Length: 119
Image (cartoon, rainbow, N blue to C red; front, top):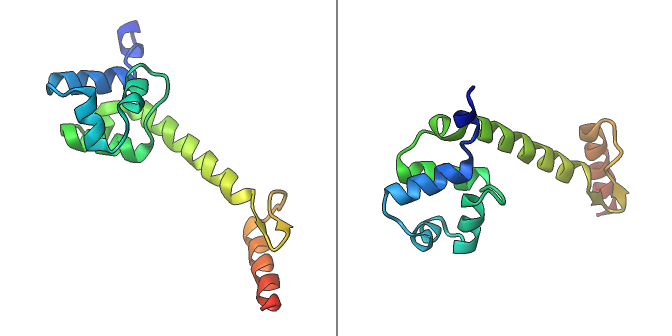
């Protein structure tokens, strides 16, 4: 991969698609139900849109997600999976903390059974 290809970021791609279509940041932000500041942050690569918003961007501009940012999508999916795994693994039910369970499903079912006995 040459240097020019590695310089392409999600933000640069969003800005390019937006300007090519003649939209302002305010207009695109409205279509995506986000603030103009959020869109500006994406275009400046301060942060990235979530996966659902990225899908909306691709749909609005008629771009296939694979063509848009395959590597970015993979990275985002990995981050979202880790975030979801953390949410699932760090919760309490009736005082039973689930963070350190080796077999979450077995422990979760056991916790539900314990709760069921309380009602």
